[in-house]
Every structure is written in structure tokens, then in C-alpha cells.
Amino acid sequence: MQTFDYDLFVVGGGSGGVRAARMAAQRGVRVALAEVSDMGGTCVNVGCIPKKLYSYAAHYAEAFEESHGFGWVGEAPTFDWKTLKTNRAREISRLNGIYVQLLDSAGVRIIKGRARLLDAHAIEVNSERFTAKNILVATGGTATVPAVEGREHVVTSDHMFDLEPFPKRLLVVGGGYIACEFASIFNGLGAQVTQIHRRDMLLTGFDNDVRGFIASEMSKTGVNLQLKTEVESITKTADGLVVKVKDQSASFTVDTVLYATGRIPNTSGLGLEAAGVAVDAAGAIQVDEHYRSSAPSIYAVGDVTARMQLTPVALGEAMVVVDQLFGPAAGRKPRSMSYDFIPTAVFTHPNIGTVGYSEADARKKFGGISVYRSDFKALKHTLSGSTERTLMKLLVEDATDRVVGLHMVGADAGEIVQGFAVAMKAGATKAIFDSTIGIHPTMAEEFVTMREPVKQPVKPL
Image (cartoon, rainbow, N blue to C red):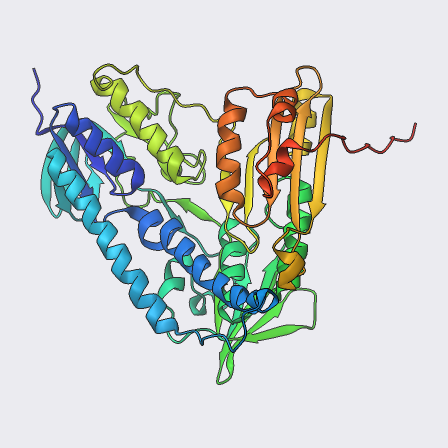
């Protein structure tokens, strides 16, 4: 019988990789994990966590302004970019340490360096060869910049947290999560922000009402939104970066250009071909329903498979793999992963929270649906002086009365939608929503008090 150095070798120390390594080690098997950078992956180091911290920072400017309506007088404090960066770096370093401690305490061997697969059971790190019965690839994704003239002058989201100096003029290229969040954040921190997107609406894949509403709200806060616009070239000058756009005589002069036009699976240089692991045209590892690749001993989870690029999804997938390979924890059933009704949030200003189907997708899947929609000024803003509005929307399948889509644009949308996601996962109907007593006065109660569906326009014969 062939012997191996490890029962599981994990490539990648992001959320999915750390979770799989730690939980597998707790099952009593031999586990190693290789990571070339700081522990925690994109989410901890240059993604979800620092981005949310900067979003909090950006909200203080509007909070100080709004406080005058509630009786607070005097000038707002000034913003110090260096202090924010220093405090963020300290917190991220603390989290890096926690990840290392969790792995150490579980008995996982951490190997610092870039891993490369040699075959279906062998890995090389720093010229040292290791063997494993099973290998899990969890290397995540990486930012990509298209071949635009002057691309050497742009930055990606990985660089936004430590820019020096603070960009007084920022151009954001893209219309997805990352682009919209950074446009909102740096606008809130005091930058003059222009956002360019080649499509006619932001946030492809979201409900169209949400997409139109957030564009309007972001514009009101000061983001100069330029839709159906593409970059032609970027030139460095003494005054800054001059960005020319296609089919227009207009140009923008800015201090920083952020390209947030997408991320690709981080599979380059991993040795996947040598190990017999198939990837698609975009470089994503192809896996079956059990996250097994074309090489039976090699698994992959998270963004490297490009299924659904969300940290909690990677965590869930990692647990399925561990239970499958080494059995569930004592007294527990093996985990399974469902991609239905996965909630998500976009930390724009205001926030977006959503779970379930968009209206367009719900109509395709269920046929008859009823739409409930509410657009209002939150109680807070009756005194704050802000023109911000809140959008809430429910989609109900007519045949079953089940709520199949729930969408919100407004303060703390992610916090609110998380709770409703549990109800929707359990199959809650509109009748159950209607019978639920709301918490008054809150924005969240609007979801359980919408009674009249939106009258849909009659299609001409």
C-alpha cells in the first residue's frame, strides 16, 4: 500500500483552505497547508474585512453632517488617511495571527511558500517535495486588468488600502461589487470619484430595480457615474493620469485609476496540467458535485472554481469536502451544499442586501409571480437633511405563495437581509410574512407590512 506524508495537503490559506485544513486535522488526520502570503486570503487581507472597515470610516463624514439636524453643532473632525491605514493594518495583522493560531492548535503544519503540483499526489514547495493522499486547491481568485493602452498606470483593488497619497481624484472602472463599493467608499472619504462602466446599468445579475436605484443613490452622494462608457487609453502627465474614453472627445484627469473589471481564478503556475486537473477557458478548476476535479485525488473549493465568489460559500464547500473525505464531526450528519437562496450584500452607500431571485429570473423560473415594492425615506432622514431613500422589494411565487426574492437598498441592508434569508431558506410564504409582527419603528418591518402587489403593466396584444 502506498504511503503518503499527509492525508490532506491544502494549497491556499484563504477562508476555504484554512477551514478545510483545521476541520480535517480535528478529525485526527495528518494535514499540511501551503500559503505564499499572509494567512486569511483575499477576504481578510485585501477584501471583505478591510473593505468593510473602510466603509465604516466613509460613513462618518455623512454622519457628522446629518447630526446637525439632531441638535449637534460645530465643525466635523478632519479625516486622517494615515491613521485609518495604520489601524486597519494592525487589525488585519491580528486576524492573520488568529488564523495561524487556529491551524497550529489543530495540528496543521503550515508551510510558507508557493506550492506547485507535480502529479496527482505530489506537491513541491520551496524545492521540497511532499506527498498526500488527497489535495485540496483553494487558491482563490486574482484581479485582472484588460489590455488597455496605459494599463501599467492603473491599480487593482489589492492596492486600494495603502495608496499614498490619498487620491483626491479617483477614477473607478467597472460596475460590479468591488467597483461600486470602492466608488462609494472613496467618495465618502472625500475623494472626487468618477465611475465608468461599459454597460447601461451597474451590478449585472442583480434585480433591475436594485440596479437602477443604487445608481441614483450613488449619484446623489456625489459619484460621477458614466454608463455605456469605455476607456480608450491612460496617459501619465505632470498633472496626473489622463484617461480618454472611446467614441467621445471627453477625458478625465485623475490621481488614481482603479480597474475593478473582474477577477479570474488564481490557477496560473499551480502545475494543474501535470496533475491531470482540467480547467475551463477562464482557468477555473472544473469540479463535480463533490468538488472533485478530473484527478480523483484532487479537490477544489471557493473562487478558484468560479462557481459563486463569496467567502461563506467557500467555507461551506470546504466543510462538504472534509465530511466527505474524513467523515462528519461526532454526532453530526455529513454536510451538503445548496446554492439556492444564498444571501449577499454590497457595501455601497447605501448598502444593498439581497437573497433569492431577481424579478427577471423569477419570472423565467416560476412563471406567475407577484411583486411587492416600497420606496421611502427612512425615519432617520426626516431630521438628518439627507435625501437618501430606501428600497425594499419582495417577489412571491403565485402558485405556492412562497417568497422567492427579497431585495433591499438602504442602511444596514446586509444585517436585515441575513435574518430574512433564514426564513426564505425554510420556505416562508407571503402569508407567514404577513402574519409576522414587525418591530416598530424600524426599516425592517416594511418587509412584513407590504400588502398590495405592484400592478404589472398589461402587455399589448
